[in-house]
Length: 518
Image (tube, rainbow, N blue to C red):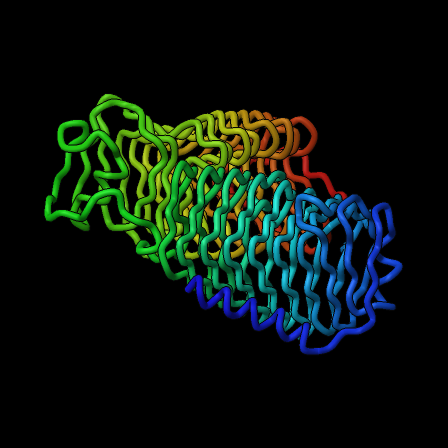
């Protein structure tokens, strides 16, 4: 594969030479590169520092420096430095520094080859759109706030001997390589490391092939696949928060030990490493954990994990299509999320504390909580998106930044539980979820007990909402049915109506102040 990539790059360079570019210039240090882009076919940069402003390229062009350690171009552009809309660009032997939104945006049917190029400090390194094609060899992208590379629409990305490192910014947005829509990518001899978010994220109908890829020290998921994205090949995954998330083929990850036929594995008697025990147990088997503290795990097969003496796990990722249960476990200290669930997960007598999010439920996952404590997490106690289902019983959701955020077409059912003392809101409902609360108390929030922007139905039965700033705040077509419930004793409004198309049905319920903000 490596030799094929070298041949491909040689052909591409030969193509440029064969075009017979005669309009050439050599620029000395301290020059403005952008002033020569449209007047010359080949721009040679000597050793030294240069600068460039926002530039649009619509012709075939070669920019060649003296080597990425010797030729430095500082971008003064606050947006995209190189917008390549047409033609072919070959850039070789330079470092590009800047703080704009992107170093390159390659669109339409244009082609870009980056050879011995370093891209540092941009929000996004390279963005591909349309049917654009980018080939990179000896490419380094570092210190970016959003994505190292984004391949969108029907674009194609080929990387060899590359490194993407030091991603900053928010965990939900920081991505080493994002492959989306119908884009295709081949990654060979690539290292991705030290990111605040995901190493590789595939979305839509994208396809990604991995050959000799190393991903290490990512703070969300090393490899994550959503929707119908297909990621194939093998990756060496080390010291990541989660190795795999979502719909990733488990074969992408090299298992730590072979699978056995054992139905029950005990820790520490049989194994000292929890991930090794999960890899080893037969599908549908059980892992018994007696005390101890363990790093985060990826559950890629059906398994039951039962804890005694309160073992502590650093986090749990459940892949799509997997059925798993955890009982008697503490999950704590994960900076991203204590649980990332794309499968069917049941939690019994579990404590989730001091994580970023307590639980992140995605896509068509099912999450059941029985006698669970979701307390003192730094973001949402529970975040549910897409078409996921949540069933919660006998659970306390307390002292998180937000109690629950429910988005998209989620179904949420809560029984005999309490949502209290969260810093912002108890329950935030966005999109079009269905919400049913039975014998549930929502109290003591510095914001709304419940906020709904558009839920078709929030049904309260035998429930109480009190001691919040506003009890329930409704807008955007939300509908509330309260049966045998109490909405009294909130500081400003017990029910706040923020738009005209809100529906109320109060049946045998006690309600104090109803405020209209229409």
